[in-house]
Length: 217
Image (cartoon, rainbow, N blue to C red; front, side, top):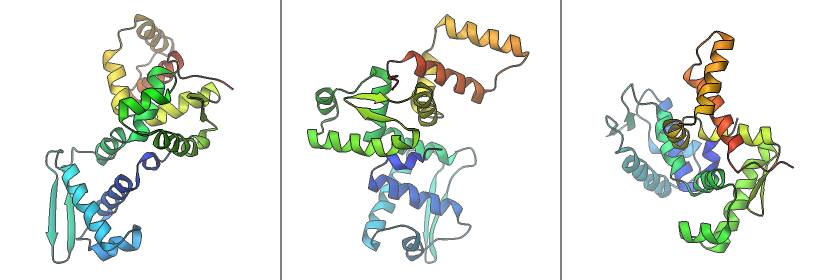
């Protein structure tokens, strides 16, 4: 399974690691303890901690407490920590590039540089970073196209979009009677009702097949 955190830049990755550490704690966690588990100087971790606090302020019910013993992070029971992680993911440049590749079928370097205000060297550095992640799926971005087996491309995008923003938007916007009829037939033939997970899996695989991102080797 893909580690989505690998798509983040260092600062955002560090913030997610701090959050992950705090979620495991049942008592206040001092900064020196975090330094044993997360790379970075004391000053750097303090900076990332403050940025993490700022980022999570948009989630209702989240509370931060600083005591002499350390830091306490509290979230409401109904808030899934995955929602916070995904908020980092969907704002990351690497995710935006993969999303664009999925929607358009290819990456055009000039278009990407103008759209996201990045330099040519930054664009190609991002592609190299993405190819390191994609290698786990035997995939590669080459000349702006995602190269690999069709089944692996579908699986990769399912891993990327499951519970993410794009899948929800695709589900909400889908009015294609073909997929709805197909889902109805599948459920009738199996004499069952698909769960949300099963529906998402089917939907994401179908959408990745229909999108222009598939480029089999």
